[in-house]
Image (cartoon, rainbow, N blue to C red):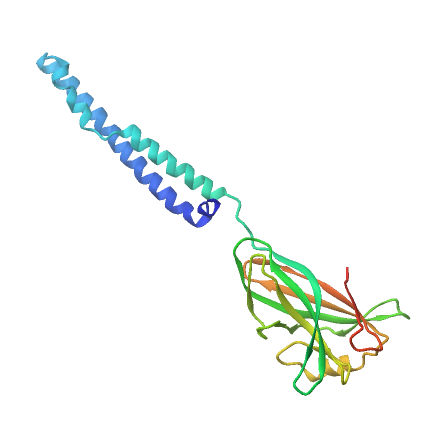
Length: 243
């Protein structure tokens, strides 16, 4: 029901309202003219005014038309000022997914589960790594390892763009760790060599932070961040959302 009150219909309602109000104005003019002619005829001929009174009823039933016109104008105003429902990206939770390849190797994927928080859908959803940082105990701050954006892939479809539907989650793959090398590899179609080289310097005792940006069409972006504590065992990492 509320979907009918959309801003794009306001112009149509105003046009319809104006059309009926113009007809109402014409009807009123015709009514006044008919009454004038009836009165003039009575003054001229001195006949009974009731003989000419039907002329007044040749006009439009302007009260009905006026009411229809006002209704459409009010509907246009309601439609124009009705609060629009802005699509919203919802970061549900982080997730891990362990997979096994045909050669027997295993991978641990780290994902962010994203949902559409409003009825309908959100198109052109994309995810990026904004920055990867490593915690420095000596400096007591985050030191950037990667300071350029990198497009990510959505889980299951392995594409950088997807459509999110209301209350249906879709996982964004951030990176994976394999059990052979233990290296962190971002989930992207193409990874520049210097990024791979920067991540290859990470040791099992390091703490990393992945700053993520998720964008969509006609929607405010979301900027979650994951704090990753690595471990000696490749699949025993600790994950939490960073502030």
